[in-house]
Image 1 (spheres, rainbow, N blue to C red):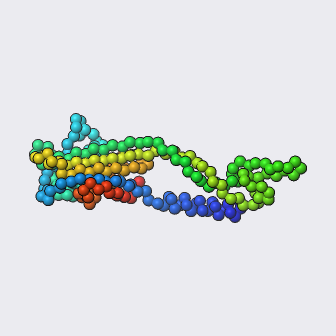
Image 2: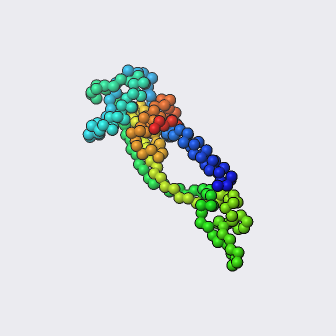
Length: 217
C-alpha cells in the first residue's frame, strides 16, 4: 500500500471515530398557543379519551409523562372527571417514508475496474484516467469522485396536548410538537417530545421554536 493510500485510510478512520463520538439529538419544532390564567395553581385535572382509548397501555405511558409535567405547574390530578376543573387531551402519531439520496463520494481508483492501454508490442495496463507512467501500482493514485445511492427510512413524529377549562369550555393551552428523524420507535422518543412541549411554559404565542435535546439511546 502506498504512503498516500495509508494516509487516506487513516483519514477515513479518523472521520469514522469522530462521527461515532457525536451524540444523537432529538430536534423538535414546538408551536404553542395559550391564555393561561394566573390562578391555576391547585386546579384539578383529568385526561379525556375517545371510546376505549384510556385502556391503551401505550397511551397511559405517554399520559404519565404529561402528568409529571402538569404537576410541576402546580396542578393536581383528580381521579373522577366529574369533579375536575380542567380536561387534558393528548394526541400523537408517527408516519414513516423511504428516502433515497444520491451523493458524491471519493473512492480509491485502485479498487475500480482496470483498463488496458494501446500498443501491440508494448501494451500497458492502468486505471481509469491514468496512463504511463502513472499506470503502475508503484505510483500513488488520486481519489475519484463517483455518485452513490443511499436509502433510509425517515419518521415524522407528532405530539399534541390541549388543556381546557371545563366550566367555560375555553382552551387554556394547546401545543404541537413535530419531530423528524431515523428513530421509528415512538415510545423511545416521546419523553423528549413531552419535555419539549412544556419547555419554557407556556411558551411564545404562536411562534415556532426549535428545541434540541441529547438522545440517550
